[in-house]
Length: 198
Image (cartoon, rainbow, N blue to C red; front, side):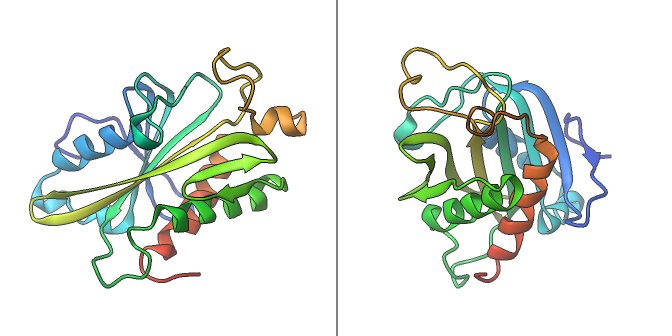
């Protein structure tokens, strides 16, 4: 058991990551940093394998340039916490690279033409369905990288201020989607990308 005060469980998926689920959190990226900083030196190796944090709701979700990311129930709010690949790893600090990988994960999982829009957004036509942020920090001398993703998954309604340009995978396809399928696809895409391009 980790010494930190976090609820977590081991996810027995071929990707082998640890999955931490929260009903509500301010931001999964912020929670990922708190999670890492609560580890002891002996627990740090878990970051070499990867920790995925997901939330049902984010109360202070962030988009690019510190804009608010509306994070109501029905969306996928995901952060992958990993040991940082280091300065020599290809594209290791490029949000556009990871956003492209996220679009491929959605395409493979949902068979929908969701595309990467530079630098870090996911779009279906002219409608936004998701976005991505990177965050780097150090814990006990170990560099860490967090890849945060927000995807409008099963929402059917949006606040008035974004309703004109936001959509969800459920609205596009007229069906509901399982979060775990996208969690698995994103993690399988991101994990190899930390050490080499695909």
